[in-house]
Length: 458
Figure 1: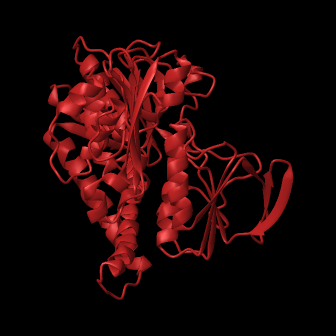
Figure 2: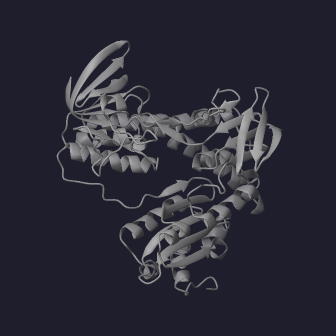
Figure 3: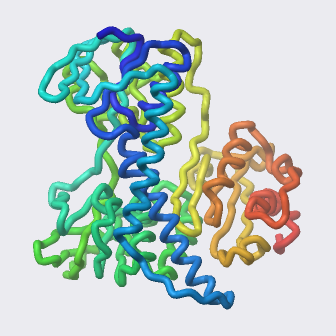
């Protein structure tokens, strides 16, 4: 079996690489051991966002009572799971359709790179040898565990367990205050879990994000009924649900029906070093600006190629790897990758935080616009939050944009475009934004940095 491109893995990096390779006329094979779409489509991005939407609707129904709207609401977990899975199935079928239309072949089985241009596939007990001019590694990553805290699928869950929504427990301890942990905390709290506690060893939720915005977001979580405990570790989880927590030297024992591990992911890079692929100290594949590894004709994309571990980053890397495989003279040319936490309100960020910009020596000008001054936020019943812009003082050039707001996941694209285009505060402020919209908050934040926002005191 000979191909121009063989892609191992069909997640966001792999399936996009395969489709783009097919568009470019390359004979392409996708090797997948599980379900087309990988983690993102089957147990990650898509099903969690489906559950988050359902959870958001439950919150809106509570808000509707304040508007004089009354309805009897109940949650049918089985029906909700069926709806979530139907969303996943439709999108998987869509990718399979696109494979066919672009001439991409699919081989089910465990793919292993054995040498440049050679892949061994074990499928239904049989071994198949595949030859390809180019091999794109897109094997993704898996949930990370701790030596004293590992998934058992019963008492201790990982994200794969949580997204399957096996039940709504009475109490849930979420270990990890990153995007995954906070999204599941939101989902399960909205679905009726009486006690949701999030713990993290770090000093803020969403480590690495702008600290001021993280504090705003944490306050919103607390008002929602999520108990956030920082600088806290889990020492032990017993079979009977007793959990030993340690915070600044003091230990407490509490009981939880379920414990969810959300402490990050590790790359599926086992065996690659043995065939000569260079890995970093954390096990991620090292690539150049064309997604090439140190082996000729071998590429790596997505989570396997290192953080940030985001589907949209994997998409762009998959396209780039396919185009380089086709002989195109292209390189990685993006500078900014946005990130979003899809709760309500949403948390979105792109570019430098205020802290990081100061560390890099910038003389800063910062603008902020609270949602309490935004008309659209009041009509949505979501006035908690803020939009913050960070810019270089002398030039006014944008360096970073951070949001806690409804619709932030869409609005952050405008901010990313502004950053990629090198726009200044004044250029963002001059753009007429429709009224009333959440997007006005970005314009007003830029204006506030220049001391001329209209709807707040500068």
